[in-house]
Length: 327
Image (cartoon, rainbow, N blue to C red):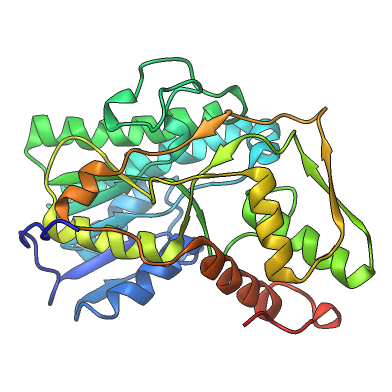
């Protein structure tokens, strides 16, 4: 690993607003920032709806955070993106523009905005480098979310150019871990497969259905690794380009399903519904930029999936569904 880039924005003693603290990424950030001796600011959506500009600017004017990490978003898998396109576009455009502008108005010293790996073209060369942004058509099944996230990245770049604001962006790969969403109408592939496989084991079902062919390849990062990378970037990076965050390694959906079955203890088979969409054939990030700064992830995929499954059994499965957790 390369020697770490120098600290240019220490967090000790800072007032840091984590937007979206109740979500999976926000929760991981709270755990990670607890080690930085800073004051973490949060606000619930009942108190401040980040989609409402006046509410956001009023809160920023009173709270005056010195730093902001924008982890708030309306998120979901292929089904959610496909059936709720207006929500995914409107909500995420509003969150990005409102928080970024309020941070500028309140003279926030540093802001970090989170993108999504779906911002890259559907057929981008693999692994995807940061410069691949806007080089081709998006994946149709999640284009609405992607457009909003691209707008957020570009807002940070524009505010840096026009106002000299130290606003940066990070581009994580597919995430999983404690606090994930297990509603099958809204969840991503890892929580969906964990839940399906868990319930199949409990019911004695011999088969689990998976959307698509199982051939697409995806990269997965444990959310605690992402939180560590975001803190690293807040302290050590200042630049216009977004920075990819991931492993730089991928697996097929079929391989992922088999690994989850091993973790859960499911011994049945998988049936692939090829009438359902696969999404992009491959999404793998080039993480050489972040690696050159001296950061790499620590949590291997199998270990991370076991951690996610423990959390699911303890927090998301109902009491009648409890089974022994993995070791």
